[in-house]
Length: 249
Image (cartoon, rainbow, N blue to C red; front, top):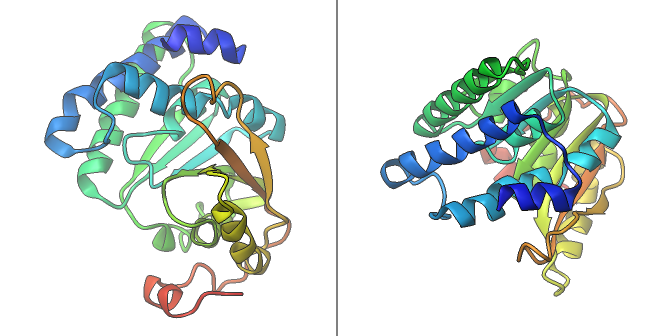
């Protein structure tokens, strides 16, 4: 299924990258019953709902530019690991504050690196970071370092913007997977996030339609893209308790 999906996406990936994508999916199947990394359980579900959903953004990410990618709330490594492989990225940080998920991310990125190395293809420099984004954004070498920050199923656009924009270099882009159900909820979520995005240095959010998602049964899946226009003020991201008490409007 992945091979057919790649053809529909117009993506030609070297054998080592295809092997790395396969080994990540196989590891997820092996680990999932013990750790519950994903609600998708079958190879077909993982291929469609994780691998191809992630790779559908490759053309957009390539157009935006950047080879340093950080994936927030990475979980099972989607979309960050496939996106890093296909760009290709030079650096990729997979971030998840849950220790057991971080252990899986380390195993998956090590296996992907081994698959690429065996095929004679240069791997990205992977790093697994088992910490909260709020702490990460205070660290030298992380804040304002990344050219792309991706996030899928992490939280509202306002939450992802507050966590992700401080990590982006100026001119970088936040890529947020969302689903438009046609009932106005996504439009409301975007409107509610505008003040937060602006305060954290972001530009206007724009929608990017993902190719072939309707054919894959992923109806309404799209990207919300936000460019980092200005430096993020030091007060962002705020601690979780403060974010819960006060939402910027």
